[in-house]
Structures are given as C-alpha cells and as structure tokens.
Image (cartoon, rainbow, N blue to C red; front, side):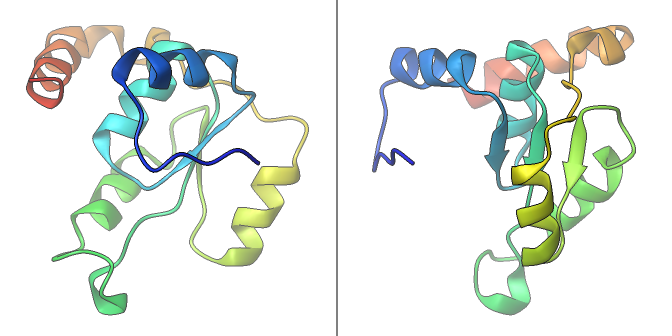
Length: 113
C-alpha cells in the first residue's frame, strides 16, 4: 500500500481514478470523490468517543448513506477487512443521486474552496 502525508488535488484525483476501491472516513468529500470516480466506497467513520473527531457527525453521515448501492459501511475492523478483500463490490455512482446534483455541486464547491 502506498501512503502520502499530503497530496495536490490533481494527484489525489489521479489516484482516486486509478483505485479499485476508495477506503476512507465517512466524510462527505470521500463520498463525493467515490461518486465522481464511480468507485466502491468503504467507509469507516471517525468517532468522538475514541478521540478521533469532535463529534459523531461522520456516524450520522454513514447512517444516511449506508443503504446506497456502492457504499459499504464498516463499523468494526472485521467488517473493514471483509470489504477490503471482497471481489464483488459495486461502484457508487452519481447515477444514484442525479436528482440531488445541485446539492452535490454546492457541496463540492464548498469543499474545494
């Protein structure tokens, strides 16, 4: 596995497009990146009770998106391992959320500012 402390936006986009799956925290930017690249998204929310975040908004985001095709919610290390080694993950695509495109565009503009 290749890791990076920081990435330029163009390098991040290139790596996302070349990935088989996107594994990340349950931030809306991660979800939008997976949707834009039409990649499966394995999400593992950062939690306030573990000191990983200031509140549990990522748990709420994960709860809102977990039933969408192409979103795989991992809440334990075993689930994370299962999804990362699965060979049948379907992509999360913008086709599933086209009715919300203005919202997606607004969120993307806010995140990228």
